[in-house]
Amino acid sequence: MIKIIDLKKSFNSKKVLDGANLEVEKGKITVIIGRSGEGKSVLIKHIIGLLRPDSGEILLDGHDITKMTERELNEVRRRFGMLFQGAALFDSMTVGENVSFPLREHTEMPEDDLKKVIKEKLRKVGLKDIENMMPADLSGGMKKRVGLARAIAMDPEIVLFDEPTTGLDPVMSDNVATLILDTQRDLKTTYIVITHDIPLTYKIADKIAMLHEGKIVEEGAVEYMKASPNPILRQFLEGRAEGPIKVF
Image (cartoon, rainbow, N blue to C red; front, side):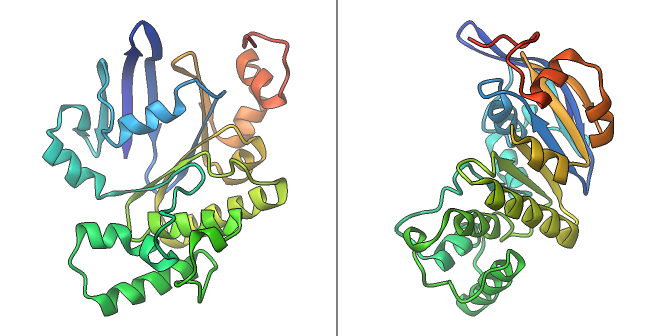
């Protein structure tokens, strides 16, 4: 569904992406792992056209989004949903207003239909009767669920997750992992998750790709990655300070 070919991006003199290559399969969960600051979020921003690469291609169903106009990109972005770090809910809006925000922005759906969609999407993430609550009244895990309900409000073909378990304890992180799995199986949507949460990765991934120094250095299914002798991957998965990944 998405094919990233030799993607390069620098900010001033710092290379962030240095020839990244990756294929994302339709209807599967692809997890991109790597240390903080390795360019995972930059890669996600390229996929939805928020950043333009210095060189390389990103093919979405065979169409190169790096060559698209802003108007064409806006059409493409309607195919995406996104769950941001920390859920990024609007504090001044109720839960219902947060979930319906993309629909109000991009459609002219009648109010009665909006209310039905809000209820349905909240139900899909295991919440009900909280439409009138404010984000400040929610736990961290509930905020993540509301963020996911908003991300799937427009029935996107692809959902991007930026560090979905940041700030959560291990039990709540596992709860979010289950939520991601359940909604993906229910919706048959393509999910792309960026994280450095290894238990989450092992639980949800159909495919894992490791980004290091601007390149995908290893990729494959969970069991393949667990068995891979790649020293960079091994150090990261095992959480060791010693190894080829330099710790400054």
